Amino acid sequence: EKLVHAYPKRGCMALAVSVIQAYDSLDPNGNITIKWDIISWTPDGYVATVTMFNYQQFRHIPAPGWQLGWSWAKKEVIWSMVGAQATEQGDCSKFKSAPPHCCKRDPTIVDLLPGTPFNQQIANCCKAGVIKTFNQDPGNAASSFQISVGLAGTTNKTVKMPKNFTLRAPGPGYTCGRALVGRPTKYYSSDGRRVTQALMSWNVTCTYSQFLAQKTPTCCVSLSSFYNDTIVNCPTCSCGCQNNITRPGSCNSLLILSILQ
Image (cartoon, rainbow, N blue to C red):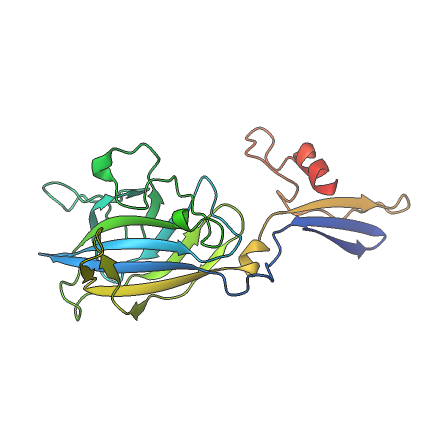
C-alpha cells in the first residue's frame, strides 16, 4: 500500500511517500506463538525445546528468516544449542575451561541452514528461519531448536522466565508479550503409544505490529514555487538511502521511481 502525504509551508510543498504493509483485517487474531518447554534439569540449569508456531493465516516468515531475542532474568548463559545458534558469543572470559555457546545477557538466535549435519538438528529446525503458515502449509508452520541453559534455576520454583522477547522477520515488525506459565506441553512417541510432557512450559505470543510497520523509511520529495527562495528540507536518508560512504545521505533515484509508479 502506498500512502502519499503533502505538507505545505510558505509556498513550498514536501511530498512524503511511505510504503507500508497494511493491517490484515482478514486475520485479526493471527499470531506467532513461542513455546519454551523445559524437558530436563541439569546441575546448574536446564535443557529446553523452543518452538515457534505461525498461527497467522497468510503472513509467512520468508528468507532470510526469523531472529528471536530475549533478556535473561538473572545471569544465565547458553551452554549449547541444537538446531539454531546465537549470533554473538559475548564475553565469556570468566569461564576458565570450555566457554559457553553464548554469554550475552540479551542473545539473538537464528535458525541453522538446510544441509546442517544431522547430529546438529532436531525436528522442525534448519530451514534458514523460514516458517510457513498453518493455514497454507501446516507441515512447515513451525520452527524449533534446543537450548541448554546454565547458571539458572534447577527447579520449577527457582527457575526464572526470560523477558523482553523480540521477534524480527523480513518486512513489518512484531510485538511480543511477556512469557506466561502454561500447561506443560505433551509429546507423543512416534508410534503414538506413549505420552511424555515438559517439566514446565512458558508461552509467548507475538503479533504483527502496525506501529512498527509504520516505521518503514519514507520517501520525501520537496517542491518549491518559482517565487519563493526557500525550500522544505527532507529528513536525512528519507529517500531510499544506501550505505554510501562517499556521499552519505544520497538518494537512490531508481528506488524513488519504483515507489511512485
